[in-house]
Image (cartoon, rainbow, N blue to C red; front, side, top):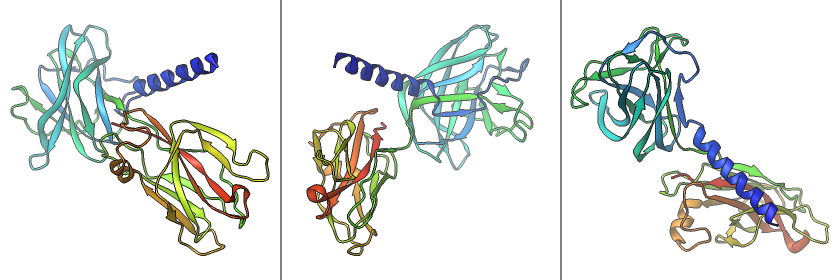
Length: 320
């Protein structure tokens, strides 16, 4: 038992470490760089569109060839002027003569929303290696300089043959992961679960759990736990369903599958955020970023063992 617990702790630690090492958003972060291209003493704001919704914690640029303290930050977008608007957070880093990736931890986390425009702002000093590459064709990202610490911004530029290199790290996770095996009901239905997205501690992300392929006109529930397992639903055999979540479990409210009796066109749907908001004392609450929850569907099927059939399951991981 101790060995299994130690292994589980090690796996969780490795998972967290891997998430921390992988950028949530990166542009032109391969090994190529525009050698012998320096940057002036300037604030340079580089426009980017967030590729996912996540909480940014750390920034990186590729530079060197100087010895100085520099800063990196994320700024909001002034849509009217198409310029950086206000600093959301920043952090400092010590740059040396070696050309490499340099990292600045943000003073506070910044929640980025997928599809929204932001500015990656680098407070550089004269003579250092510029964080640019020359591999990609076409115009580089829009950028603008400031020579007064970001109080005012200059014209908007784009390199015709160079592209800015930077990385943004943070709390980002893979999509919801479906696992385990659906049971086959007495009418041949195999209910399949899915989730529209990962939940967030701040309820910023929509998270709807849907179970399709349920027998029509049946009552059912969505239930969940804080750990997973595959275990035959009927210990004496005779059924095809598996219990995919490990007790203790918590049920959400009962609901009807609608659809047509005897057909596989029924469904169960749960607004995860609405359930959590309405039940602040529910199993697992209060949630923290990185917490996992395992969700499964159950519905009435009198001819089957235990008079029920179960869907497969989905693993959700909380984001900030």
